[in-house]
Length: 439
Ligand code: EPU
Image (tube, rainbow, N blue to C red; front, side, top):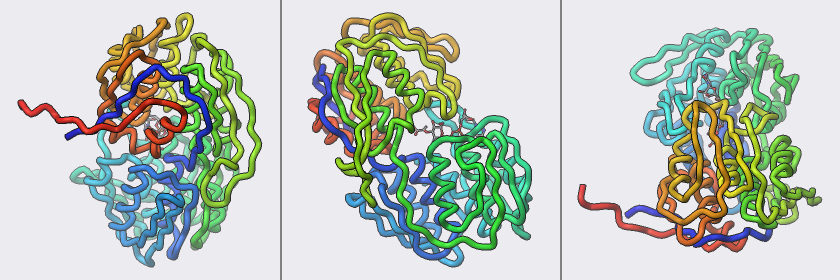
């Protein structure tokens, strides 16, 4: 049996939706707890498959985990001497497993972490992770598909200039440097809100980091860190997904749990498309985001106008919202150009969206989309998290039934996607279907 999301469209989404913590922050926050023995607690944790994978990874390193998915709280008791091996079975399920590398080398002075392969969005190199750790004094070799890192005398601060502001490399290197001897400077560091979140948690654990939120991070190593309680930053990509869904379907959606300030370029582009965005005040709940949290409201136009977007590292337009731009442009008035600057292979989604009648031509890293009056429902397959959510948006825009397979991708990053969409008026169900049995 395989699961699909069956959507009967079209629907203009309307209502209120709560967004909890960011997948791309919480996984790293969980990894960072390895830096201090004792019990750390993270709140505002989304109930997604990747959190469960990270729980299992940490368990295998000897941590005791209490995870209350409904409350959105995970508490992690880190032993005095955690294990140092992250095996391929888990790393292949989730690339973010690589983020235990920095904390383990920093604290245990040794780590063996499986190297994730390429995936549906591109080759996804790790050279900057490796080179940066070497600059901090670790020996890093590739053995039987694993990064084997060791620094018997501990790490030493260094000047590291990243060739590109990589999110994962910045995080791994900062997590490694907080317990190194002396000062580390990371130039051309990534500035995503999730990096700010991790740095703030590390500071609360006792780390010394200057330049948080800038592209020059200065880390002064300390002897030891202490466990912490921390609330994860809201998921700007999930919030952006709802915002695009509202704008593209001509809906009216209030998003709680993420402020507009986390979506600088996105807000501009939604306004260019004809949506009206307004701030919604509120009071953040201590543990998990609720309907009381501040957020923003998106009122979509009757038919959106096409937009031109180039993806860039933060504060530029996020690559993870790329499929939603293409879906919006697919039904917009005019011709829109999308330039993808981060991942070379993020186009599998486009072939699937074309099955719904989208008119897209690809040339290198550009996608030219000519808007059509309407899409028509079809069976399509998700190849990654955002492609999956983008195809669901395609289904909301299309006449008739769309069935999206590969829903396990969507479950990795969107909590209760079907429930939330239903709450916004969508006609969507999770169905089990027979797999073809003639093979
Ligand atoms: N890169 C290298 N060498 C490196 C590191 C990166 O060549 O050592 C390249 C990558 O191949 C890629 C580009 O640099 O072309 C950007 O990679 P980056 O390291 O910034 O991304 P990441 O840490 O692997 C995170 C998110 C992605 C998100 C990107 C960009 C997590 C778990 N993943 O990936 O999120 O697209 O940053 O913002 O934090 C998703 O959530 O669906 C997702 C793919």
